[in-house]
Image 1 (cartoon, rainbow, N blue to C red):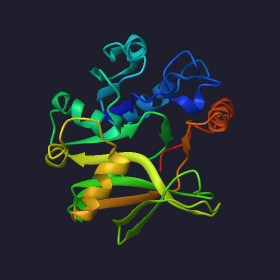
Image 2: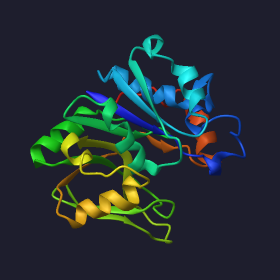
Image 3: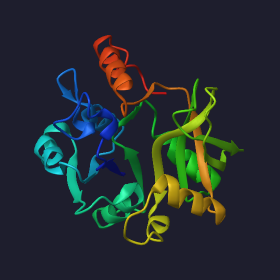
Length: 238
């Protein structure tokens, strides 16, 4: 199985504490945040990783190289201009060989069993599957809703600080669906998933209550550093 790590964003919200490197390379306990993500992939047998890079992307390649030191095979898909998450995935497609691939936001750590997503996709006969997560406050995110483990509502915005279910930032997508995406700038979250949903594409969801964090803002970055130091990140997957 293969994975694409989306690490081409500008990371503007984290610039006040991480300004000299791409956000996924933020230092956490002496190693890059994204290394915690790749460690998790390797532990679950995902050994082919494509880094979709943009802003200061050479720093990502300088860090991981060919991946052998970290237990995987690395390749790199460089953006000449910002393509958004959807455009970055489509741009990386020639690097993929299998009939489906994981896609992950490289600034998110979700301690889950990836095979659950494969089983969810197959059971639902879906073209795409994604992990969701219940959080106490959805106002920073967009709420998602499912019926019988099929996505029915996506990224509904709310200013209310209330609990709800959000996108966990980990996807499994069939190649035949990826091939329908034209090249060019686009957002997976704001363009393609809503369009696929409106077209009746079956998108399966799998809810987990495992450890989850998005380091996109300074408070979350500091919390992840504290959690690593306290040993709370190395818990068993679920």
